[in-house]
Length: 237
Image (cartoon, rainbow, N blue to C red; front, side, top):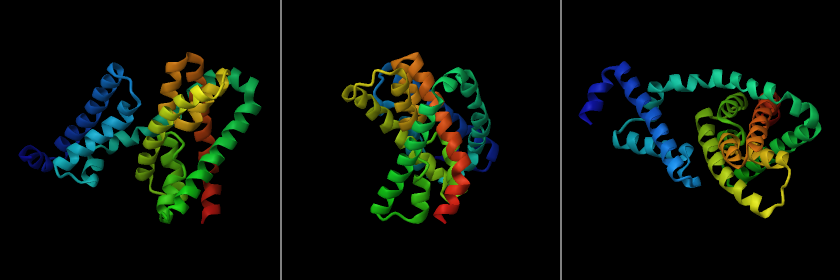
């Protein structure tokens, strides 16, 4: 505790401390997941929980933590641009199956948003919470951008995205046992649409082609929703 009090007087030291803690815990969680690949040990779930425990024990507010690690959030911009690479690499696949991919992305995105909005309304959530929950089925860079455009809270949306990815990847694996999905396209799209980044990682464990398709669908969902966000915001307001 005394160390953090000392660090709090030095913003640079505080930034180094919380940045190192965030990155270090994530890589430690990845190593743990490699040893015991269980859905409840996914790094997207374990690392944030450990960080929450540390910040609470150190009596550090979210504002102070975010201010110290804001540079990590800024990296989401270049990450979003880098998503153009898998689209270029899979351009032949898009040309062959674009009607099916387009229909799946539109129907899947619509279903995800309608179900999120309906469930939030049923539970009596506030307007900002409903808007923050709406883009939960997109990867974090796209979801936070859409949330900000439609009036949600981007940081809260990021939390919903993590929960969706963790549980979506676990449920997706169970769905494959129940549904006779023999098509590589269908299996990959299932994870890319329903669980974004975590789903892509799970799809790669099933097969290389499934992983590529899951990544492609995840990117397409994000691009479609980012472009549609202004229209969505206008309709909701």
